[in-house]
Amino acid sequence: MFDLIVIGGGAAGFFGAIQAALANPSLKIAILERGKTVLGKVKVSGGGRCNVTHAVFEPHALSKNYPRGQKELLGPFHTYASGDTIQFFEDRGIPLKTEADGRIFPESDSSQTIINCFLTETERLGITLLKNSAVKGIAPSGEIEKGWRVTTMNKHYHAQKLLVASGSSAKVWRLLEQMGHTIVVPVPSLFTFNIRDARIKGLQGLSTYAKVDIMPKTHYDSKIVVELKSKVEKEPLFTAEGPVLITHWGLSGPAILKLSAWGAKQLHVYHYIFRIRVNWVPDQNRGTMLGLLLEVKATAPKKTVFKTKVTTLPTRLWMSLARAAKISPTLKWAEITKEQLQEFAKQLTECSLKVEGKSTFKEEFVTAGGVDLREINFKTFESKLFPNLYLAGEVVNVDAVTGGFNFQNAWTGAYIAAQAIAAIPED
Image (cartoon, rainbow, N blue to C red; front, top):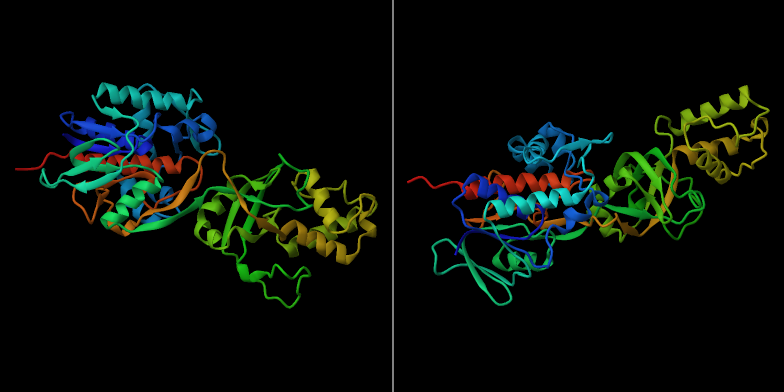
């Protein structure tokens, strides 16, 4: 018999168990992990360095990094946020560092540092860790009032309270759904765009700051190759600005990953076939870019277009977009036609690329989906349907952009759930 059983040996599970034990040392706590190893996602996160959180400390600003959960997490972030995460690790002798883009890592640059911290705390606090214990059933216990019975392959465990922190486990979602919870169908989030296009071919490894729009499906017809001049320009569905990385398979980088998170549901509906519009020089639009090109034509007529880069664009990308505008390597500014100038301005600021599929971002697979947010009390992270059932981490329908925000959701939810679990009832 346990006071608390935690389902899931990942970030939210370990953090919840540790925080509950810290808040009430008398609790008898067990973590049930389905596999042979624990903290697998922690191990691979941040390229093996573990991006524990992000240097955004104001709750409102922090919540804006969650496509699903933005409104619900605002209150919880007033209770436990990035600064509290930093304090937790530094209090345990793990110094952290903040990189230029705001991501926060252990100074050791090793996720094993974080894993060792959790395992050490678990042992110190007397928390039972049960591996190879995949959960097959969850049910209110008939033997203990308001308690729970958790069934694994060959054992039954009983606990007064239950914290489900099973991540994106389809089996656990199914168990919760059978109990009566609503599960928002999970779809991939945080992925890169597969693009086969001559304009970016051979430019892999090249990175530049750009603005990227996801265009609505009605904006184009895949059967029509020639652009229709009569077509009305549509507003983009989603827009992101930031570094864009050209890869062997298409586009990646922070701006693309942000779009994949915000557009996760819609892009799943599109079967990951859609168009993006890239402004490679986001401080310009087509009109101002044309004006700049005309100015260069007037002031440097004898120079070749290829060798007169008038933006901060990488040279190889400038040349590739010039070729797309039918500009040859030997063409001088004096010789360029009005049509070529207009097309070049368009390629630089409204470059249309067709996305045909996605690739998972490294090993950090994140899903958009899970327990419906309307069924959770975000003051305690307790189920509104079942007393003494708590949910934290990716098991709920919350996900974030890349940069440590998904872990912060895990820490925050687990901490608040732990405080509610550990509270000693008043007589």
